[in-house]
Structures are given as structure tokens and as C-alpha cells.
Image 1 (cartoon, rainbow, N blue to C red):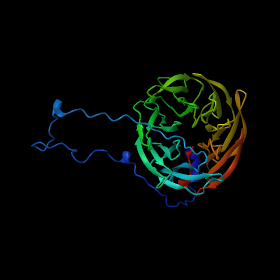
Image 2: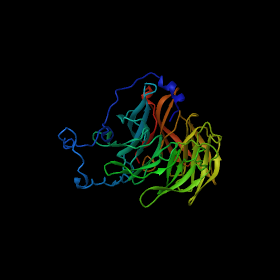
Image 3: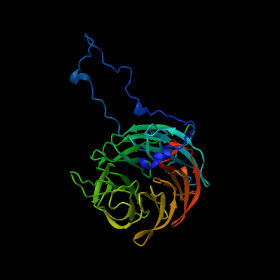
Image 4: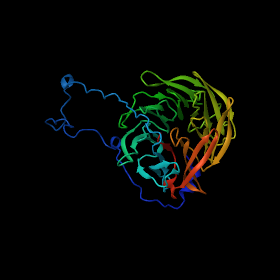
Length: 426
């Protein structure tokens, strides 16, 4: 996300906003569940509630039912029309968060110029699709999570919501089978870490009772072909209890609870990353460090993955403000670089990686890559700069290390149209 000092000038751009459509009701967040009839005990002679009847008051209430994950299978048609969902985390009023998402059609010529808007009543930090492509999960910066249906009559519409108890929400990852999603919270206590949500057949949400506690967690990447294992960045702390380890290998146990199976001290200083990319063959990963205050900032680390061991396999220098790294299944990697306004294109060479191209777009951070079908290799990239205003860029990976621009659409002026997080239906 663009840092505040970078967007103040953009917020002063003339507003040309249309009336925004859609405002769904967040039922479980805003309303109670108590029944009206019989909700209050009978009053005694003095108007006070009757005392508890003690052991003979009746059976104990039944515990809430266990979450019943169902998931959504990958859509069977890889060539169907696709949509992109974009978060809009700013508004026209300085200091007031934006709380909307937009839904845009993606085709061979790029994104449609106009999209539908929906107010999700929380500042969108991450949007991620369920595999079926009809629903997205929206993670707000305050821990409010929505399932939004983006296909069908009446869409986009919120179908379920809940609030997770935590602070500093930074990342969201959805399992390939759509049964679970994992939200990452970053703070100085182990009350934060990785929280798992069970997803029902219609997109309903339940927070699993146990979470992986970790201080200063930031971003998570599932292993290709083995989503029960993941790389988690975080845990490094110079305050008591001191922890030198900054990168974790975690695994789900038989109950679906994340457990740490390895902790590694790969960095010597603070690390700031928004997205880790794992190579499709699962043998290496790219970890950006865009921190402007770290002695190791402006680098991307190549992490080797060998069984239960992660190791520093080299650094790629000259990567100022590197934010997110993601791979196309053919092996081409893209790394967004916020302040320089660059998207770096990397390919593997021997045991390392080389930058083979750089594309110039304003303030890129999050982006999404289509991995199958007629639109295989299409990339949707939100961008914004004082010179160009807000844009949605469509690129395409056309070969190893080869990326071409498909189309650029300009969004209306004003802070409410500055784009942030993005996802494309699988």
C-alpha cells in the first residue's frame, strides 16, 4: 500500500466521483443473535429477576457446532470470462479511510473501463478469490472479514461477515480447495500470528479456535502442491524475549492447526515484505525486503527450500522498496517496487535469479496473475502516480522472462479511486 507521504498529493486531485453503488449489511458484525421471546427472566415480587435455580435449572447449553468447511472446487471451465476485484482503501477526505471494492470484467483486451462498486464498511487490506471464482474473501485492516459474491444476480453482495480479535492485519491466503483461509496479524505479542477461517459451502465463515501465535508476523506463502506447509515471515524481535529468527517453516497437524517445524535466522536486520513468492517447483522462494530503515533493505533474498530447511541462497541487490513477489507457473517471477514505480521481471539462472526486464508503473504493490486457460499469464496491476492518476494495468507473461503490456485503463480522479489490493478469479 502506498505510504501516506506518497499519496497526500494524489488526494488533492480534483474529485470526479460518481455515486457509489451497493451497501450490504454486515449481519454478524452489526447485529446481535439474541432471541426476543423469552430473552428476559421473570421478575420476582420486588421486580428483581428470580435467583438462579441452581443444579436443577436444566441441562447445560450445548457447545456451538464445529465449523463445517466445504470449499469451492476450481471452476471447470478455464476459458470462462473472468473478473478482477480491486480494493479502494482511500477516500476524498484526508484521514478518512476508503471502504469499497470494485468488480471489473477481464477479457483478452484487458479490463473493462467501468466496474461495479460495493461498500464493505472496512478498509480493504487484502482481497482473495475462492477457487470456484464466484466469491472473494475481503480482509479489512481492522480484522473484519467478509465473503462477497461477485457473480450472479444481485452481485456484488456480502454473504457473510465476522470480526477476528487481533491487530495489525497484513495478509490473507486461501487454500487451493477453498476450505480454509489464513489471515495474518502483526503485533508485538503472540496474541497475533496466523488465524485460520473455515469456509462453508455458501461462503460462510468461522474462526477456528486455535491459531499460531507469533510476534510481528507479516506475510505467508503456501507451498506449491503441498498447502499443508508454508513459509511465514515474522517473529524476529530485539525486545524480551529476544528472537533472532525471522523466517518460519510451518505445517498443519491432523487437526488443521498450524505448528512451527523450523525457525531460521536468515536476515540480520529488519525485514519489510508484502508478499513471498515460491517457485512452482517448491525448491526456492523470493523474499523482498523493501524496508527503508534496514541495512538489508532494497534487496530480494533467494531462499533455498530443502525438506525442513530454509537457507539464504543469495541476494538480489538494487531492489529498492521491493514489496511483493509472485510467480507465474512457467517460472517467471514479478517483483513490485513501490516508490521507484517499477515491476521487475526475474528468471532463474543456475542457483540464483536474474532481473531481465523492468516495467514502469506508479506505486505498484499487490498484483494478481491468471494461471490457466485462454487468459493464462494475464496480470492485473493497480497503479497510481501524480503524472498518470489512478490506473488498472493489464500485462501478460508471454514466455520465460517476457512480459508485455495488454492495456491500461484510467480511473476517475479523486482519492476514492486510488486502487490497492487486487485478485483475479482462478
